[in-house]
Image (cartoon, rainbow, N blue to C red; front, side):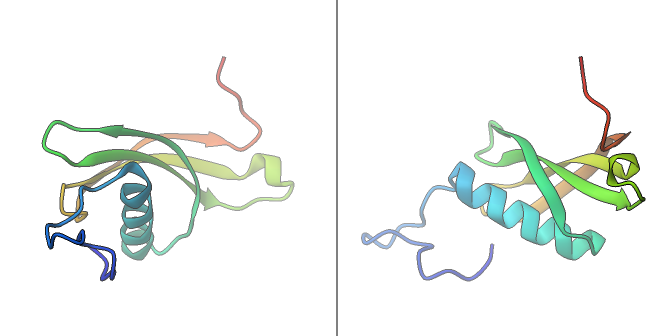
Amino acid sequence: MADDSNDSSPSGKPEKLTAVLAIRVATEQFSALIGRTPEAVSGIRAVPDGGWSVLVDVVELERIPATTSIIATYRVDVDAAGELCGCERLRRYTRGTTDM
């Protein structure tokens, strides 16, 4: 996990990985891995081992007009320590597309 002065509580125990922190570390590590900045986070859920599964949207191909740009949604998994432990592209779509 990223070095933070807030990584442990006053009692000296490591803090639980919160959803907000999981989003931050997942997007930072995933961005470093693929070399692109995430466009948005479209979902998050806790997994039984204390980690998190985060849905991250990334522009894979910019086009003009922007509504035709290709966006991909990736599932990015981080463990309870905040380390990236897996990622998978789930779907690709144009920015102007909506789910019904």
